Length: 308
Ligand SMILES: [Zn+2]
Image (cartoon, rainbow, N blue to C red; front, side):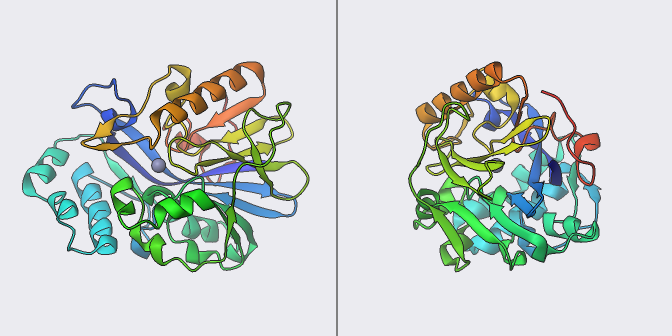
């Protein structure tokens, strides 16, 4: 069973958001996208990048400021202009600041468009699993008409609460009417498989398991893939990068907003990941944003062949 990292965006991001101990003005490159799993019975997609409001980009490299403007205008479109907080993100002084960031911003076609261009029909995606429902993971799920959509019930509730946009959720989720399979509370802990509760065995063969890894958001999920040679642990944002759990680095804050919903629980999840990695030599942990995992030679259409 192979897995493929489908990168949608590569962009600079304030290091402080990823790690609370980072220097204030420094920037770190991150990746945004989704991961495709090729199971013998069909494809599974884990997360879907950003929708950018349905706009399909060909592969474009631009300045950080131009990329920033595209992302913020898509935010404004989905939030509506009435929310002053978002409009301030487009103020001249902020754009000037972003303009000084010398790391280029790269937008590739959406995850769905990349699948299509490699000859994969979107109707062949059997399952879409959302590790959580933050803006940069959900994209436009309406493209996957035949898929069962897996989300945590707790996560859905958090995403549909009135002020959810302040916590990183796309407000359009409040109007979702997709056929989602809402996962309830954790079901089974089987320590010989993982330190986390197994909430769903997707194909009933123990090869693709959805695990409960709360902390980053109330209903964060991860996916464990039992490949032929390796186990892949797709941990979403339970850790932003491998340093997050290997060096015990917590994400930062933006004013009143903490990048982990429950910092203590998130830290205990990261500590479990570290212990688990140390005890399983074939386990490869794949954080969704770690640019050292999503290197150019490891992304779609090449299968992931990286190391720990
Ligand atoms: Zn994220």
